[in-house]
Length: 545
Image (cartoon, rainbow, N blue to C red; front, side, top):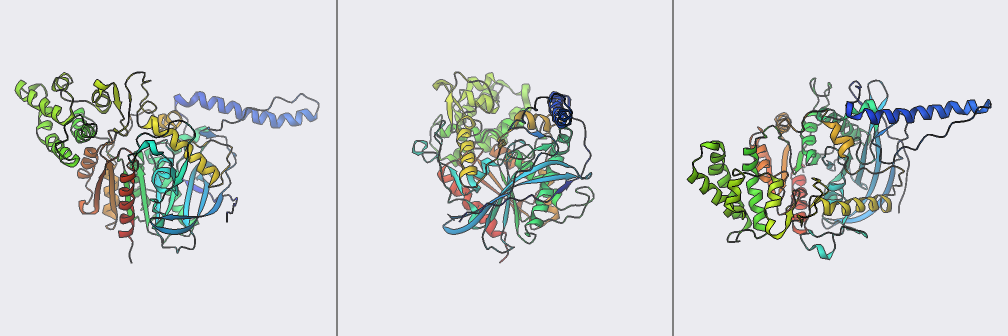
């Protein structure tokens, strides 16, 4: 039985004063101000028309994908439906709840909204675990975790994609299938879309700076989580955060803020977490030297070379990666540190080992001063075959020729699986969740969120793993799961290991897992099953009997 319900969520306050938009946004602000002026003109024009004056033309409609909407813009109605499914081998009755929540400032005005799609077991007690999940960007909606791992449906990759799911359909028609790996058998799931992503919006141009920014974003999501728990009567539920990519920064900062305190929310919120799950972690941006990136990236380069048979498979994947890690942390790091002081024979020896690990000729390594970033590696590895490997998942390939040079749209992985995921999400919203919205679901907003989020500063300059370490210090029961793909060249396994090691996190409460996948470690039948099992075990082991 399906039941649809419309409701208006309660208001949720976010502290902070509004600031003017940055120069890059003023053109957009001016156009929206003009639209608002036309709206007011239309309203007064009605009175003028009654007096015999000519009414002005109606204002242009607000773009469906607009990130910023004018004050008074109506919230989407809350929609609930009931469903049945089987997850982890368990039959389950559950309901879906799609909500848009207002975030209200100290002045009582709505400054933005947060989108939430929840899957809640019918008849479950208040102590059932909860997973709050979000993706990254920072301007990305939660559709990747939603459709790839946590939701009840997932994209159908088709038989041609194989068990690794690396050849997905790239043009319609697209299809959905059931997702038995969803952890709904052990926990309820709430997918969160921050302001400007998904159906969530910023209300008024001047309020963008109140929700865009590392601190502002984390405060908004922390407040949303606290209010969601109160509204749904789930204060007693064990709770987990799951963040992916920039979402791992958000998770670390939200984990610290939820406890409250005078330097956090200004209140004693005391919202404790049982666990934090980090996929494709990007927490530490404070160490940006090219030498360090080369060292932490080498195990992933070696894994990619092994996968594409650019090197002989004399060893297993794990053994080849272990060899690369040992070399990276020893002779390679020392050689890069020496720089121009490294003598010719030592330089030749290092280049030879790099060639043995990656299949890229030693001469090319010497030309590039014994280092290359992920973009260069992606072009070099299979250059002889005219192919580029993906940065987000190096199992995916596309021709080197005719690339448009876009770091996302032309990435061999993102460029191929993004259309499938986005189409699958739209189908799921309409056909299963009963959502018929007049506005667009913003998958990733590069210009209107990402570009403004950093407020003119370079992105990711700080070590946000320290925030998670602080949260773990405050809460001795808080545990962390770090999940990384061998073939992720954007947030590498080496970077994940280093971020944890240098963070001050209690190592006995941190579990690191690596999967034969990429930035989204749930792409691939075997890796998705492994990750889903690890998530289930992580949640189950954190719940008291």
